[in-house]
Length: 293
Image (cartoon, rainbow, N blue to C red; front, side, top):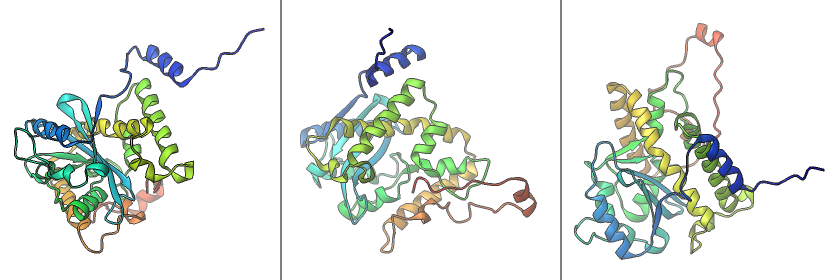
């Protein structure tokens, strides 16, 4: 009788890697920045980076990430170094943004506010809301990948896509990368998503759980691929529209009546969507969803 061997996740990933013909590292290259000295070293790295293409890609995690909630972690992926820095905002608080470099007088707040230092976000709105109201940071020099994707479409522009859909559709991945990315997302969600039995407060547990670290690192490392793909497709007029809409998003996020939750966030900027003609609607039916909101 033939015995059946149950493969572990690691066994399955190793088999996938053989199929792809690649060898992945044991895990993404990252560092948790949770002390002033390490943060000063990071600032000295950031101020010396090239700006074309953008070197800095940003994401945030927190509990109800907004003015009503908190920021737990700020993820910085530095493209020239292929390295991710997880800044522990929960532990450092204001020092995360005011600590200067050892060789530079600049701090992270200066870098985030510098118009001539490009920073790439995906849907900057709630990140800006939280950064402004908790730490008085006025973001500038931002590229919003969500708007870039919308601008490059050849089909309807009524609704924006979420990050997961953009990665699935446009971040070209090997089979192994896709498996690793999906596995990291699922493990992370089980820890923080209430509907999966998790709790959002896990982002404030210290030390950070390994699966939370992997979750934080994964998405931000795909942002350069998305930026490059959409940038190459975008016409000059649409690039201008994206810049204007990004600045409007940031300004709106600082307003008194900003609402960072709800289906309205899935709508394209005003003026970006032109309804199809009645004859066109008869020949094609659009499937519009709000899965990411």
